[in-house]
Image (cartoon, rainbow, N blue to C red; front, side, top):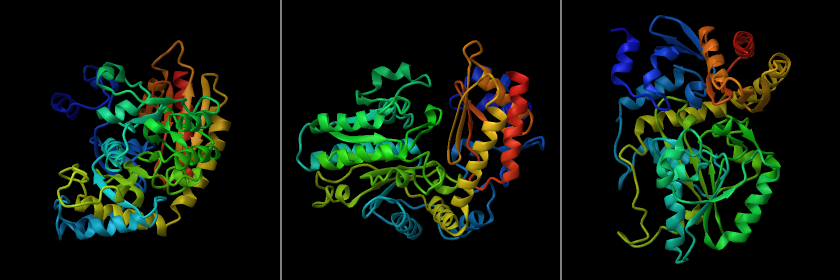
Length: 424
């Protein structure tokens, strides 16, 4: 059996119809170097989706490799339930210094959906601990995406085949999608009208990533933040996708002028090295859980691998590298270059409906009215030319590592243009 046959015989891939898996020419990766992945046959691919938006500085970053090796010589993992770990403490301290959360306290998990699920439970219990009845509902946005656990699915706006799970989803108060005019203004009004039953508002600051990079003006978020502040409704910012420099600032909340009560982090937190996520709580929220030992105010929630030491060591070094290297400057410069080249070389294609870009979160939306698989076929044509991309419905996503070079941006756009010449 070759690698593809072995893969299909034993692995179940997420968001993938396994009956068609082999027919879609998947890349079987063996190793990585810089911003490229190398398959089992030695072919190279520029990782233009950052391995699903997680790889920030590239693959096999020497400093991150070394941080992992050094921690291996200490301990790989020890439980954070009732005990601590030195490297996890150091990372939590470093994170608290940079997140836009007041006197931050961090609860760790292993993926973004789990971080969101933690935030939902914390917000719910917060009001119970405060003795306030009826604050049991959440406000979420149309076209939002927060993960695939039941709670995060309930927050999401649907799509991606989630309708089959509708009987399991709990109802939420639904604000408009970012694509609708005045979405944030409408959401703020909904908060003021329904605040007595709202535990929290959950929003992706600036960019709804899985919606095809739907972008709301940064200035529109202030009204929502003020409505939450005035009514006491908790504000949860889901920065799983937008955090750690992806939008041009360390966190998108900074551009939006938001200081959330709870912030959810994931994806780029370890630079794409190890699974880790975090729910960061403000002092206001954290204090509501303080009380006698074993009391009902305790948050009875945690994960076996939450606060993994290896992940924390890499995450700490990753945060230090972002601070010491011109990473954010590069994001802004390469974003401006990407925007210019997309407008010049991709916009003229008749099949291109929209181009959206914030930092290095990019989307090219195609007219797929008579060819539902056009975006997918275009991404396949890009892969054949050595650039790894991924489609979401009619959208081709361009989410390269934050250290992408000017020459590599040119390569991505030239490859996309060639693929569109073939498919569209």
